[in-house]
Amino acid sequence: MRLLVVEDDIPIQEFLKKSLSEAGYLVDAAGDAKTGEALALEGVHDAFIIDLGLPDSDGLDLIARCRAQGSTAPVLILSARRSVDERVRGLEQGGDDYLTKPFALAELLARLRNVLRRVAPPQYESTQLKSADLNLDLLRREARRGEEVLQLTPQEFSLLEYLCRNAGRVVTRTMILDHVWRMRIDPATNVVDVHIYRLRSKVDREGLRPLIHTIRGVGYVLKPV
Image (cartoon, rainbow, N blue to C red):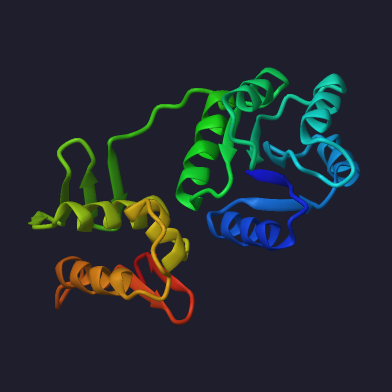
């Protein structure tokens, strides 16, 4: 998925680019409406994240111009404008969702997934995840390594599910905190490392091929060696 972020606040823009890239998206960014409009009309983006307080134009006018020129990509509006009237106006003028500043990254990612899901073709989602001899039953919330049922806490199962959904792909501590804990926690905390250690002791017992690997300085990946 490729996203366009139109945000003139450079620290926020850089934060969004880094966080969305870590979440697996390709990200283009613009700091003003003119550049944002030119990028938006290339027609290569799956969704836009647009701030309303742009230096050269109101974000709502940018959305209206893009819609008038045939852009149908969903728009997640970011704004410090909090009134109900402003939010309704944003949705009526072409926005698909509205998130006020300051915002939590976990909520932004959840809202982004939601607007993307609305325009994506319906797909069947399996209730089973598998990697090598590791099997997760999402309905029963049960994990097996071979024939052995793993005795996992709910948090450990959620962590293992996230690793399985991203099998073969390195996930950072920040991504894990956002997706598993769904709240802002200081990335310097060792909560992820502690849970990975406990999970690994159950999944990768002695004599079994290790599945959970540490990528030093980056994060973790689940894959057979």
